[in-house]
Image (tube, rainbow, N blue to C red; front, side, top):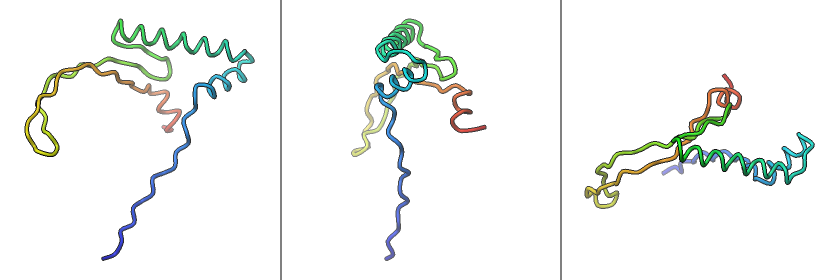
Length: 107
């Protein structure tokens, strides 16, 4: 039997950390890192508060955080196949804006 070669997963770069983002913005705007970090923290606080209060928050040009509700449903236990009840719950999703998709993926 011939060995089937599995395609290798594409190596992805590590995501930028908060410290790296802060440094990049501080360099680009010629502001202290501490000021940038405080502004970033405040933006996040506002986003979390507004999403919780209004059910969504728009990051202009980036996307929108939205809270969705899923209904209770019956699922299946993967090993036994027995039906199980799955409770209704709220979920937080992030929908990417078209300008962000176009800038990253191309048109």
